[in-house]
Image (cartoon, rainbow, N blue to C red):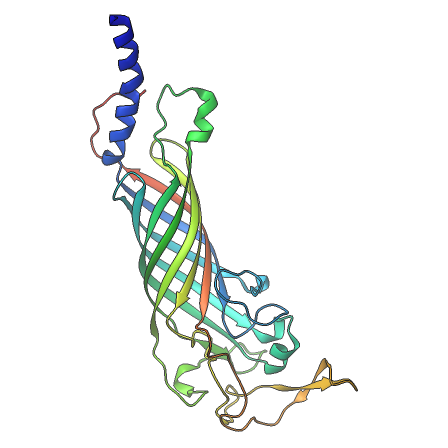
Length: 295
């Protein structure tokens, strides 16, 4: 009977230890590097603009770098919160789109983006502690965890465009009011995403995070609604489209006459702009004192 009790205790102690250990491993610091992708009115793929969590409209040639840093705090064993600071650059160019209509519009932009926010992570594949004497055949499996995330925050943006393609003289677009309206340089976002982590050691881990940002603005690319009729070299740069005898668009022609105010669509006001991050993250666990033995 005593042997049975000892065996039960030997089985339970590692479980109890692991169940309590997360309370002493709540806090981690992390840094991320990856790519940003713009999903808005300008640029994009060969079809009509897509929205929400779609990669169909991403122009892969214009992906730009993104950097993120912050801390991760475990509220419960399976729920964590991550306050973050992010820098990214977003860029889109109608000339590189696969859509003839967008090519003829001939607009482009870039913006530096500074973001402050937080996301909650719920772990569907639970994060486990890797014990010193864990069976080797299970170590690789136990090192992996995966989550879904939901978050939000705010960001600063300031879209720019080139005066001429050759001299790279970038000008701020917001003061020009290219659609006859003004807009601010701060907006909010809501994020939804997925991710995974792989524990390298007791303290170090590496992860992959993919999240989409839905924003409260449609002016990230300075395009929202109709043309203003302005002749400032930025508001209207469109080319005429050449059609065949069946009125099917086949090519881009010469620079077109200015569109009249409020008559032609410059952007799609039905949806706000969005952007997507793909980040590789390095975590460092900041442990508190934990005196129970490792198994």
